[in-house]
Length: 444
Image (cartoon, rainbow, N blue to C red; front, side, top):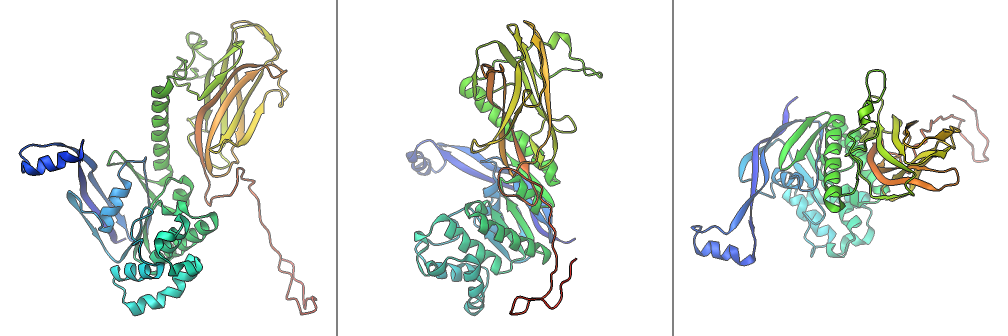
């Protein structure tokens, strides 16, 4: 396939000054004295995108995604390198870019269309479709500065897609709109894909990237970290996010007092005796409580390949595993885990008592491992996992919140906490007359 976009060794440098006056000092010395430090937002970024493909750009905040898109659209000049593209480019960049806040919505539509080479007559022909898609009513005659963020992105997206560009660039703007408008946008993007448009799509939503993109590029530290299939790239991205979160937790409070690096097992599944009672150094948590009767040493969430589950597809088979050492003798301890979504809503929880598994008497110093296997029919969201061991009366021996984090992707996305995996069926019942009777009933 022909190439629609080529980025060659693009780099962007910014000068960072510690104080506002340092810029003036440097200019007065004509550069003989430097009062700035160099910051490279992008370094040696190169890739090609074939015409008619949709490519997702993902990466942590500050990785250079928005800078890259501004250079591709021509609103920012690179320090080094070049960008080449074939065909008209329409861009929906971060909120606040592209529109003059003092102009009305109509005036901004004409201005943006003119920048893309449309005459006033051609824009007038497009205007009814833009108004219908944006659905902001009389506000289109008002200054953009009076718009809500949702109204702004509605008009910006409607203008961008109605001009039928050969290349469409979207930078996280769709996350501002409501759910109905987001679905409308996704439908329009799929129509553009069918018509052969090339789309560059920046998003933190793994489900949207997996649903729309045939390829993904991970940006990290101003460079291309990974370039490949969306699933592989998103797994790498999720790993970077988890590394950042763990580093923040350690710096923030030094939480997590364990020293065990995972469940050690030989080919028969037996745990090395030397590692049996050691807590895991990777065991971190946001909150912990309990009376000390037991201590959770390790907690893991694995997929079917026994790899750490960080990004999973809805319906995937998972295993939640915990290992506990008992400091005192007790009878019939209860083990359980709980999954919460990013808003703290309980999505699912279960324990050994509910599953009618009794452990009986547990000796002092004994170590027990418990595994829960389940199919992850959760909706698209980010989730945390908590683990607990307590008495049958609910007395907490050890409870740790926010031990593990994972994200669920679903293509197409589903609404709500749960994915009930519904099936659908239809019947054609005929054509009804005005009196409600049908000429013929056909069941298919």
